Length: 591
Image (cartoon, rainbow, N blue to C red; front, side, top):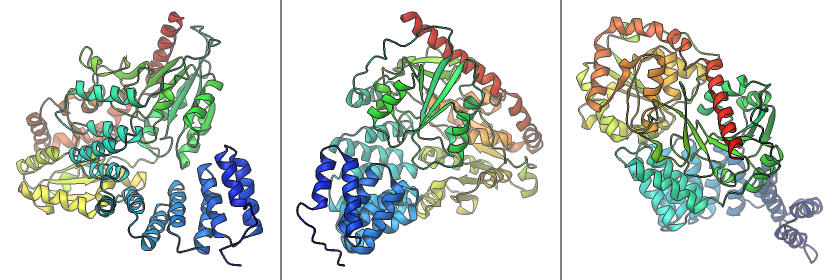
């Protein structure tokens, strides 16, 4: 049978469209299933069925229908594009890339295809190729907002935050969108020298543009101060992600007699970490496919007392749900180092080193609630390798290292690292980040150091995706870790310290630039905290000049960390629960 089918009037596709447009997707789905059953070689019916399934979150079945559709009508670029989108949602990035290339082979002048191919390449860390596709999209359609936004994301991944900001701004001017504005806000944290008050004002502007007016929780809510509480955590990062390392201790150690814990997971592709977290929660909702209104309704049905945002302005956040105030008390914590800008979020969890009292309150729409010690607790992976001897003793030279997200590595940071390498003869620098799998990014790094008089033979860029044990084992080659600024590392700092590698950090004015100082303070090792860039280099040089002392420090760091508040889970969760209880009491007092 030909893929061009003559169907009786009114066609099943017409009826399916009518059902879909009339808000009855299940009826449309049934109509399309009948169409493909009656005409199994009808490509258009399979295409429509796949798209409808995709819109409802049935990505696996959608991919099957769309794959059949492209086999029946391989010359239709639109089907290839939709098949690729389904593959993206399933985490099949390479297959998605192939689909988008197939679409472009058939319609080479389609800007949407260039844009989404650029997105798929970025997801693989292939920034140079992604830039080519996104620039092609803009050549085909000047001012195309999605391509500018994606180009900003790519440039950010290369450590080019100032350039990224310009493209996010162009995208916002052309097509204001909440997600684009969040990308813009996140990028502000990466740029040194910005006025924190202006950054805070920009976060509040996001809230004014995109947050729907807050509604009040049900009057039937029980405002009894001492009763057990229902805590809800909302995150897209309940997967193998940095947030999970710090969230799991809280989930695992909440007092079940006083707290019932619900998780709302916006992770599009669950993994083994998702399943481990799910087993520890009292309630679990896979919310990735829910609309904001649906998720709000679910949270209200669950009678959540305190709702906690773990994403801030990072990807796939649900701040629009928090703006609707589905819970009496709302908190932001952990996933984003700045204010959300939302008046509907009551508190931001922090502590006194990363947010010194009297210094940062004005830059937040939330009330800062300072925990008595750390604002998060690190749980090291179970499969950690042992701490190694100091590598410099065998190598004959000191190796500095930074494993932070390369988006945090600004040009000014590279300049100071180059100065440090010149000051420490024969020293090396090992950079490890997924973004360094891209040849164009690596070439840019080497060119930057070469211009500063440091040869490529002293710089190693590693962008290979590694298992957790293999990633941590790379610290066996690092003597001293260098923190990024103005956006410090968190997970990478904890990993380095756990592997016996001391970290040098530069403490700035904002939370993002003081996390390193917070971790080292609560570890009880202040020698790594610098107040300015000159001191940053001097402290690193002093460590490098004393190899016997560095070797002793290395062998004691893991135990020191284990005994510190940074890794004391019961102590941290006790403080966290005290904070939640105090927040609840304050809410009950307001009536």
